[in-house]
Amino acid sequence: MITYYVAGDERLERREPSAALGPIPRDAVWIDLVAPTGEEAARAEALVGVEMPAREDMQEIEPSSRLYAENGAVYLTATLLCGITEGRPGTTPVTFILAGKRLVTVRFDEPKSFPIAVSRMQRAGSHCVSGQHVFLTLFDSVIDRTADILEHIAADIDTLSRTVFDEHMSDRRGATDFHEVIRRIGRQGMLTNRTMESLTSQSRLLLFLSQHIETAGFTPADNETFKMMTRDVKALADHGSSLDGKINFLLDAVLGLVNLDQSAIVKIFSVLAVVFMPPTLIASIYGMNFDVMPELKWVLGYPFALSLMAGSAALSYGLFRLKHWL
Image (cartoon, rainbow, N blue to C red; front, side, top):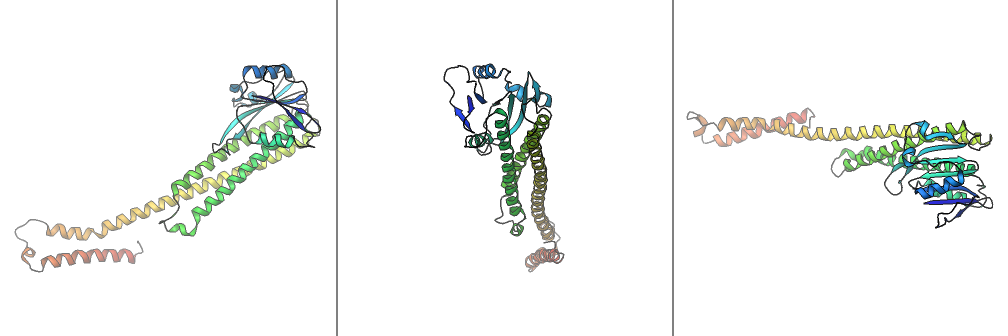
């Protein structure tokens, strides 16, 4: 799908794409390509004068394939988070192409930061009159969205911590299912890792762009904006690292509690085995089939054996209680 925007009265105005594969209007300042077909990519190339990257090129991991300047245009590919609201968190590569006063974005998913940025740019007074202004607004929304996701992760980790370390959790009966807790910790851990991956790509993009300000069509005054964005991204990365440490600690704590529960269960079975060992020994002795066993003809032999078995079991149990092993 192809969508383009033109600069209106100090705001961005969306123009519905034509059904026919005609040329894109020359006053378009932002061309947004979502899973573009070959014809749609050709229309953008005809207007901008540069080649659109293929999906395989966008998925390359080496920086030289994601951040470069070519034919007077700057290609910037970042890994952005997507699918968080829909419950399918993941990442998707998004390429920003700055050529002259135009911006072209190529993507194959719908990061939530994009509709948020479009809403901002379509308000009166947004002053989005060039591709450079559009890029700054878009990337600012990307950073804000990343911060929101980290805040959500932090809130969920706090909730999980209270669940795990609640004083009532010492009584395992009726306690929260640790299987679900571990799954939630795992989901937050994967989301944190994806967020850190996105922040790393954002940091590299800003560093590269700060070194190619003039080629990308920015003014020296925009360098301060890039510095501010870089500080924000670094702060978010530090916060993400802290959250990752909390998640690992929480996971270790939960696994430790699970091990304690299992040890308590094994201890109970071990104690029961020891408690019933003397009665089993007594029963085994009197269960032997020998002709010469005086107790076999004793009238009180049966009550005596039962009393001996019960007494030995009670003695073992009392010893365990005295030693605080139970």
